[in-house]
Amino acid sequence: MDRMAATRVVLARAGDALIVSNLGSNTYDLHALGHRPANFYMWGAMGLTASVGLGLALARPERRVIVLDGDGSLLMNLGALATAAAQAPGNLVHIVWVNGLWQETGGQPIATAGAADLAAIGRGAGLRRVVAVDDPDGLDAALARAMAEPGPWLLVARLHETGSHEPPPVRPIANRDEFMAAAREAPKA
Amino acid sequence: MPWTDDVVAAFREQEVRLIAYVADRVLAPAIERMAADPYFHLVCLTREEEGVGVLAGGYLGGMRGALLLQSSGFGNTLNGFGSLILPYQIPLVMLLSVRGGPGEFNVCQVPLGQALPRVLDDMDIPRYDLDRPEAVSPVTRGAVRLAFATGKPVALLLSTLLTGGKGGRI
Image (cartoon, rainbow over all chains, first blue to last red):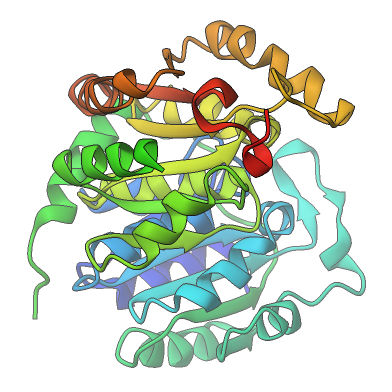
């Protein structure tokens, strides 16, 4: 599955969900497909995207929160899966793109290129709604459920690299203010 | 513990509800108090840096919070401050149980505990000592106000001079 195509599938299902994107490729792809006020673009804090999504989901239980994460980043903060399972916010949809690489730094292979299985780790951390997909139709079907049924969800999607490499012209502080205003809104039906 | 009452009351007054924590003997009574109070939502972390993300997300969603941790655990948070909290100007209140000072018995707590003020200064994170009973209430309240009014992190340093340290035997 193509990374940009996979991000398109997410956006088609996202509705008014609050989206937090991981540093690098996920932030670039999300912005390249059209800025939305409900997008929070991370530029750093590798590993913390899942945690930011968890905090947001706890603060805004009425809104769906989508985390666009990367396998290299999640491997830095696997404890976040256990914390999400313990807190169990029903509105959290954590999507992890698995390419088995540190893409931004030259494509060095990482543990998920070999034996590490993030879906199994998620289940082992206590998450019940874990789906592994490897094509756009599978991702779309999983998202249809994840956006409608209570989570927390962990969608682990294997893909290859063909996304954007264009850093978005968005200043963090401006992004923060616009996102916070969008997050305050009531959910759309 | 009176300091516990004052910290919890100041958090309530300032609407600090999301409490992310890693265990510490000195902080335990405050954590237990807030866990028993439905006003607060507690998040038990696996590692301190995770709490930086959780509290940043909470703030973005309109919920104020605080991170409760030991001075040694502050070392685990640094990139969260450097590449999320400071550049996005996200307020974050830390209540730190300072190890490595008067009463310390464990040499492994000393280097980071004693470097803590210097590291905070280098990171441009304001720090305030909670070292006397009469300071706890105004300093906690004021530091929380400062953080949320200005988009800054703040560190409240709980001294063993106030708490008695681990086991209450400084």
